[in-house]
Length: 322
Length: 297
Image (tube, rainbow over all chains, first blue to last red; front, side, top):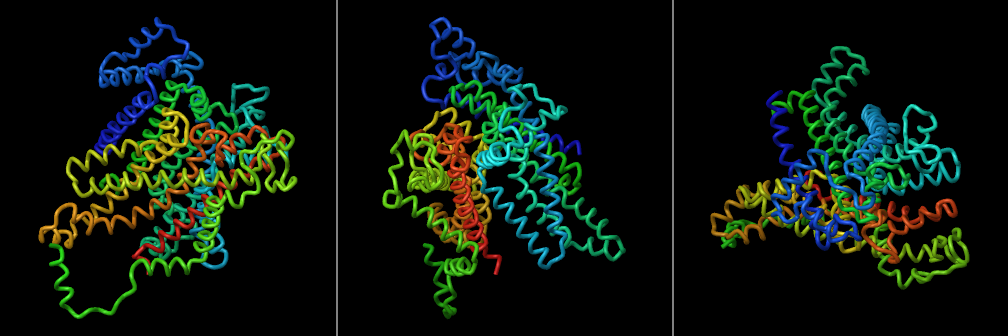
C-alpha cells in the first residue's frame, strides 16, 4: 500500500507542476506586454518599475517561473488589478463559497444517481425494468446535453419569478455575504444553485452505476451467494461492494465537473464563489485573479483525482496489485 | 511495393462480394428510429441556420424602442423580442450559424491537430510518444470548462479566440483516442508485413494505420460537437467568445438575463435552442457509435 501511495504521488507531482506551468503561461498568452496585463491601466513610471522588479519580468522565463511557483506555494498570487486586494484572499474566500455548494450538491447527486442506477439494474426485466432503463438513459442524455447555466435560469424562472418560493440570487437576506448553513433563512439561498449543480451529473452516475452493477450481477460469485440462500438484499450489498471501485472513479470525475460547472452556474445565482470571481476577473481583464483562481481550481481537481486513485487502491486489492 | 501483398489474394478464387463496412453502418443507422428522428431534427436545425437569410421573418439587428421585451406571438414576433426590440426568432435563426460554427470548427481543428499528434505519438513511440502524451496529460488535468475559460479569458474575448480555446481543450482527448488506436494496430502482422516489403513510414501510416484510426477519432469527434456547442455558448454567456451585437445563443441568454422579471419565458428561449441542438448531436453521435461498432452484430 505504501508503495502504491508513493507511486501515485510521484505521478501526480509532474502533473501538478505542468498545471502550474500552464497557469504561469496565461499571462504570456494574453495579448500585449505581460507587464500591462498585471498593471492597472493608470500606472505611473515608478509603479511600472516597482512591479517589473517585483514580478521579475527582467529575468529569463524559467527563473520567473520558479520564482512564481515559490511565491504561489507561499500563498502569494500577486495583487488584483480591479480591487488591489491580495489575489489569495479573493481566491480562497471564493473557493470556500464554492465548496459550500459542493458539500451539498456532491452527496445529493451521488446518492440520487447511485440509487437510481442500482434500482434500474436490480429491477427484473419486464415493462417496469424497461421503463427504468429508459429513465436512466434519458436522464443521462439530458444531463450531458443541458447547458447548466440555462438550467439555472429556468429554475430561477420557475421557483423565484413565477412561484416566488425561493430567492433568485445572492447568499443571504439583504445581500449579506456571511453565509451559514445552520441558519434556515440562509439555506433557502442554497436550494436553487445546489439543485442546478446536482442535476447534471445524476444521469451519468446513474448510467455508470447501472452498467457496473449489471456487470457484477452476472458474475459467478453472485450465483453462489444465491445458492447459499442469501436474501436478495444481502446479495445487493455484496454486488454494490464489488461495483464500488468503478463507481468511485466516475464520481471523482464528476466531482471535478461539478467544480468546473460551478464556473457557469454561480454567476446565474450571483453566488460569490470561484465562478463568479472568474466571471468578474474576465470582465475586468484582471489576469492575476484569473491566474490564481484557475491554478487553485485545477490543483483541487488534480488532488481530487489523486484522492480517488488512492481510495480505489484502498478499497480494491486488484487496483493495488495492478 | 505493397502491391506484392495483394498478389496471393488475387490468385485465390474470389470470395462472394460482401457488403462493405460503411453500407453496414448505413443500414444499422436506418434501422435505429431514435437516431433517425434526431438526425432529421439535427438536419432541420442546421438547414434553418444556413437558410436564415431566406426564412428569417425580420432583420436580426433591427432595434426598436417601442417593441422591447414583447411576449410570444406579439405582432408577428413569434418568439417575442429582446431588450433592444430585436426579433428573437430571427436572432435564433442567425445565432444558429454562430453557435454551430463554434460547435463544429474547434472539433475539426482539434481532430486534425490532436489526431496527427496522436498518430505520431503512437507510431513513433519512444521518447517522442512519451513527451507528447505526458504533455497532453497536463492539459487533461484541467476540467474542460476551466481550461476553456482560462485560455480565452487570458487571450480576451472574440469568436476566433473562443474557437481557438475550445480547439485547445479538445486536442488532448483527441490525441489520446488516436494514440490508443494507433498503438493497437502498430504491431499487428499486416503492418509488419508491409514494413518487411519495404513500405516507408509515410506509406504505412497512410495506407495501413489511418483507416483504423479514422473510425474511433470520427466517433469521438462527433460526440465532442455537442460539448463544443455547450462550452462555446457558455463562453459567450460569461462574456468571452462572441461579442455583441452578433447573434449567438449563449450571448442572447446572457443579455436577456437582465429582463428575467419582465418576460421570464422569452428569456429562456435561446437556452432551449442550445439544449435541443446539443441533445440532437449527442443522440446522433451515440447512434453512430453503436452503428460503427464492429463487435455488435
